[in-house]
Image 1: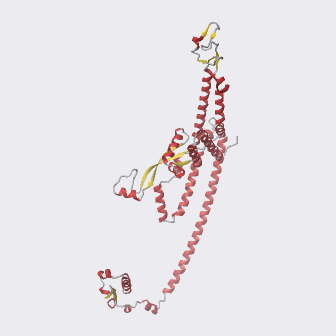
Image 2: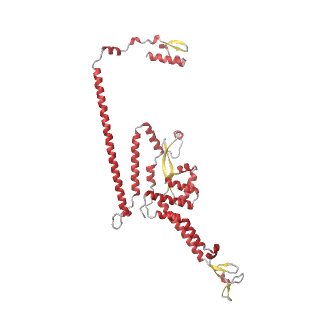
Length: 413
């Protein structure tokens, strides 16, 4: 069998989940399993919002799948920002469950996700148990033999015929019609003479054929496993921390550039964590006998070498681009400094020869100002000297009078 890519393995795992859902479960379970195959990890709140039902309804159906060990559940402690109403409650002395400080509180967030390795193992086990139960039932039916009257078709258990022995025929006789009894096999005459046990096994094989084919499709492949703690660390941020980051971004717009770099670093860390998670175990990559690399180990080493080369090339390109930007920025600053030096030299030349006319023009004419005592303003329709206006006068002024009073004060300051 050709080596499967990660995308092909993921597609076959999703196909297995969907076939199991349609074979053994009702519509609500099918919908939830299909949503988990598309998103892999989802919160209970997000599922309830997308389906338009309450979280308790989602938990009821996913809880049953969790009991069957087809889905997995994780509860994570996260911080959420408090509303203004909750903050006022805490300030007034009220006790809010989960509140640690005045701005946030902790809550339990439930995550539901699929672990394809465990899913495949559980499906294999349950199919094997179902087959074993049918086999045991067939054996019990075949071994349960009695006696049958060919005339009146009355049946007798093995322990009942001891009292029906007839010496004249040297056998067992029917107590109704005295006909000699023959051995009975229920599997030969039930349902019109068909073998019920074999028919049941045949129907079971037909019903589970798509699931068994899907299991064969991923047999021997390295199924994707999810580390929920790593996924949460890389993809989930506390609501309180998100609000604080948004506020900081509004206060300092320059942080937008830094955020882009942080996103790049986060993607690099996520890719590195994914490579570590997908790395082959030591006992697969190397032989436990000769300690030499196996075929899968050599393929993994080649893939790691390619990734390392791509990373080195990307870092070199990034360094060259950064150097180019630094040189351009240095040239820009040099040009700015040269312009500033030229402007300072021109200003010094102008300051060396001041004129008497300019000095005279710069001197304010203090005699031209009108004394405040000669200016009057209107207060309630009556003129009042500007210098005698008090706060009581200001309270009596109309809007137009106060504007005129303010303009007069500005002119005489």
